[in-house]
Length: 156
Image 1 (cartoon, rainbow, N blue to C red):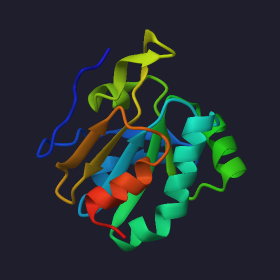
Image 2 (image 1 turned 120 degrees about the vertical axis):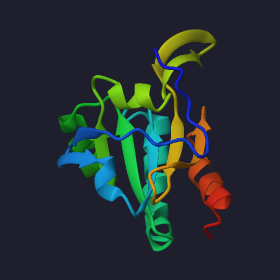
Image 3 (image 1 turned 30 degrees about the vertical axis):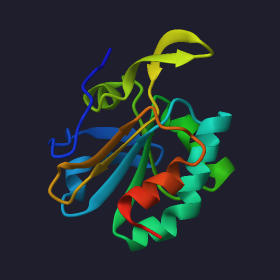
Image 4 (image 1 turned 135 degrees about the horizontal axis):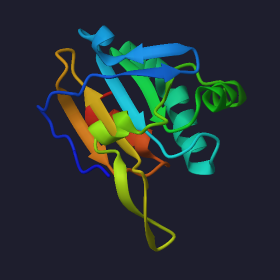
């Protein structure tokens, strides 16, 4: 279980992980701003809402210099299905062993229907061009999160 919550200025842990289209390595994006968003499970209502909000905001985020990457414990095959079903055009990372979620503090105890369970914590970490954390938000809401993130980043 992870409690490695990151804060502004921390070095973002580098990682390489499978995607539905190959693999993704964070350090390959040095010199670019990257939004890593962690979500519990593809094709569930909240995660679909959040993914579609990122999809619908992608032009504005890309225009502001941000690359969006969604990360969950789903298999690459499930991510491919999710991408196809929802028309997602950003990278989806498979973190089946939870190594990335652990490194980013996005796995741990959370409340689910009033019970404490271990699982993915809906989180967003924005990584600067130099590989440091610009913003880290934990326990975010699925609905409205992308609009709030855009406000926090000063993106219209």
